[in-house]
Image (tube, rainbow, N blue to C red; front, side):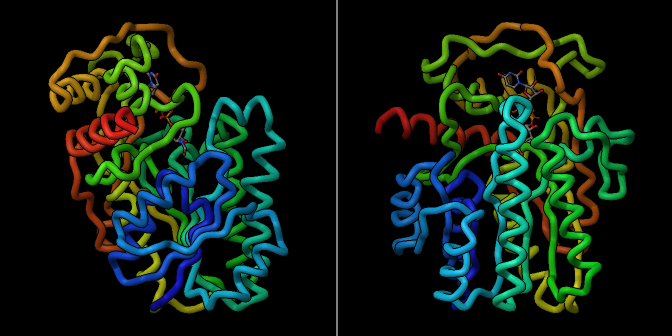
Length: 338
Ligand code: WQD
């Protein structure tokens, strides 16, 4: 059984990807520092998979730990999720983001080279496009000046991967530029676990729906969009997990020193108000919200052109916005019972 190291594997996207990998016959090995995830996720994985997923608690910047993992397991490849991702926090403490997000990638790449592990799928983000010049966004759409240190770390990491490839290191790498991941595993045993007040829309919506939050504030309705609210491409986390599996397998017949990148979105854009309407439909209850001021730094509208990933990786999203909101809501209901 081929082993895949999942850094940040106890996180939201990492844990769902662990499920997908096991179901495809791989054995994931998780490393996570649990700074933005919870050990209960490992219990959820065990229940879903009926098997333990081996894990190490620690920091990907810890070179000794990374060497230990690579020496204890013959790894087929790595999926690198581990990073801090709070846009607002990154502006307040940029060095935490550069050390963690960029530093851990360098340590990972050095360790992969030392142990002859060549295959890597990297978690990038549509944030590298900023407010794109063209819509839908293609992989050839120019990247923009980062809106935050978080976004800049993603751009820098992509550049590091391109430079390592050019050096002829023999690595085979894919960067996946996520749009907006939402939803949860249909079992409601794993899902998004924001610590504190959610920054992202969907957890705030479900927490409002369950009564944890009094009301949702829609950040502006005076934008140049169909109903004045921002447009995003919301993709089910299981569709995103499947994209990582297909990316890993796409690398299998590639020559050494290979690098490519793909957008991973549904190809559809939805406004915040459309998301609220869809949530009210799947939850069967009205959502308490108000229109508030714009959030600084928000991109007005962004959604993916998914032609490239469809053609090259034979990947297509299977879940709708309503499917994802239903799964997010069921997860929130399950959380409230814990
Ligand atoms: C979505 C829309 C808000 C909360 C960020 C990062 C991106 C990625 C995903 C890591 C926007 C609106 C939100 C609320 C609202 N993170 N909103 N009220 O900003 O598109 O992307 O998270 O990879 O890199 O930038 O996601 O969920 O924060 O916002 O009206 O309480 O919902 O204005 O239009 P975003 P989001």
